[in-house]
Length: 292
Ligand SMILES: C[C@@H](C(=O)O)C(=O)SCCNC(=O)CCNC(=O)[C@H](O)C(C)(C)COP(=O)(O)OP(=O)(O)OC[C@H]1O[C@@H](n2cnc3c(N)ncnc32)[C@H](O)[C@@H]1OP(=O)(O)O
Figure 1 (cartoon, protein in one colour):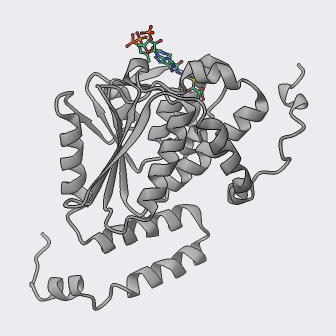
Figure 2: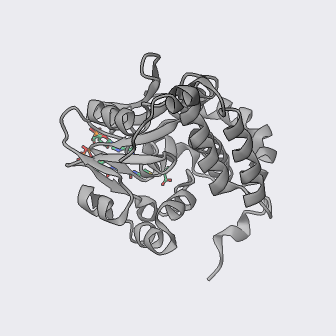
């Protein structure tokens, strides 16, 4: 069988994850290209009282399918969150009862060359890596459907909640491709290789029970008031602490997952010692707390 990649001589021979920065020079060009494919919005709301941000994918006529312009807006929203020192948590969701049905097929049909696919993929990898690396606790609220690229988006978050009637499917294989938004790598890190292979290679869609059983989803919630319920769960479980502490815990876990152990330990020592003797610790040690 002749390999399709034989015609893709323009693809760099070696691309390492850390090598992504060497592709960054192309991101501005890609942004200029993507923004021309109009439709939908991606809206960011920052609640300064709770420290919880919400990003909503909004293209309801197409079940929140992602246009090029929406990819750019998502990237811009992440850039804004990177500079928000007050952020504790982030909820990524969609409007009008859907999460996201993947790439907008009207847009996809206009960019069907390996070169443009590579550019789009680099852009989305950069955006979702930056989302994943935000020093706040991120949750994807899956409602309605999350398919193809939409399912991939959920894997960039730390946690996933899913409504009782929702479905999630990595259907890329049924569309003649594999994961373009980094979902293959991220799903494998979440589930392990065997379960990820099952989900990716079957292309089957999962209901909330399947998704919870395999460990893709952390919490199943009723359809009603799913955003409020996700927000309450996020705040109650992870975000009652001091902002600086939450952000440091997230950074420690990221370093441990993605760096060699000595570098990660060095980072943990610094993040720890900067809190030692601070107001939160002084208040806690003066309280004679019992943890049972
Ligand atoms: C990036 C790329 C990749 O593979 O890496 C991808 O993500 S490929 C994209 C992978 N995603 C897909 O192939 C999704 C295909 N769509 C579906 O399976 C279905 O539409 C569902 C998403 C399950 C929703 O079904 P349901 O019966 O609830 O609604 P529906 O089919 O009437 O959809 C409502 C309207 O949204 C449109 N619509 C739905 N998904 C769309 C998409 N991804 N791009 C463009 N339009 C889309 C439908 O054509 C329809 O338009 P009208 O009202 O005008 O008829």
